[in-house]
Picture 1 (tube, helix red, strand yellow):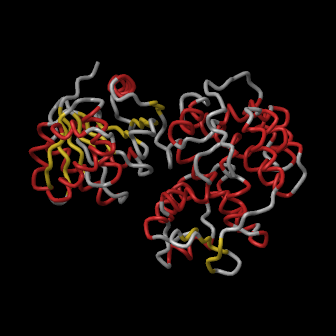
Picture 2 (picture 1 turned 135 degrees about the horizontal axis):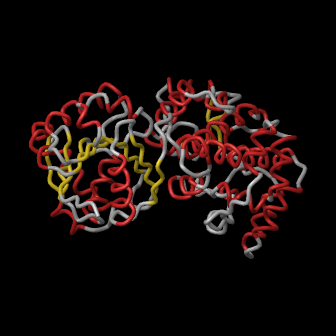
Picture 3 (picture 1 turned 90 degrees about the horizontal axis):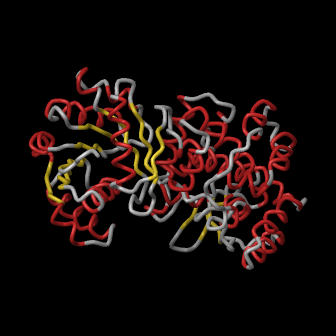
Length: 425
């Protein structure tokens, strides 16, 4: 088993930097140099890290450092993790420094959510490229256990195996090894779905738009947070960076669903980027929602959609199969939208996982452990393959070869669906 005793986290005062530092200090019992622009920021980050894992005892493993100490910290570390802002030039500057001072047997890594690992590996010497890898944790790491491992072309294969074992056995992560493709796996699937839902909100703006679609694809469909609300929670600026990157660097059959809707672009331009500034697609101080049609905020509506209430009643008594059957049999516009989005999610998740990950079932791990969404294979089992095929072909017009590729197998999910389906709107 890989022995990691000392770690440097650069950019440790950010949300992910804090969470990653806490995981290594607690689960890994490692000494962690938390490096920020200033010591004041690093000291604040130490307190946040302890709170994130509910263990003040880890504070003795956390050491506050600033950028003047990078050389010393890197040269003493078994693992160096970069968690700075998602900006290529900024990251390249940090990795060029790591390359100079990293010790011979140490590992260099980034937690980027989308910047090319191969591009960042160019900052390293030929020898150091072999020990550079992407380790993408999800927020907050204490409760979201997914970890995407992204080797660069030159990364040593034995090192990949050892890191995976360490992450799984010491840090108790659910690890998927993925190719260096835009968005990697979980964000590729998750933000495709969220952005598609945003596009549906624009398409159905006369019916209500944002809160209308968020109601239709709400918690009862297998997620802890409504999809458009999720984008507000993450930050519309972050959402834009992710989908723009995927739109620019990929061209799969769902390419156009990564195009950010104009109404979201306008909100970002106005600085209304979500929960962190109190307003975005929702306005939190007044429990309001953005009306796409009127370009103003209004009260969130309690939409009268009878089939949703019937589904929730079935969930309350544990009859999840009948709950889903109600959705599938209903002929209302709202049920049609719900069915289309759910099946679209299944097909895309499984199809793209086959291209990016080692197994198509890695899509289940990615969505369950990284987003806390119902895994696509579990949802497919619940809906039924034949019904999924029918909706994919008739409603969504998905190419027959993709439908065959996704559904003509006997793969079963290792996850149950019960814990993901909430008896809530």
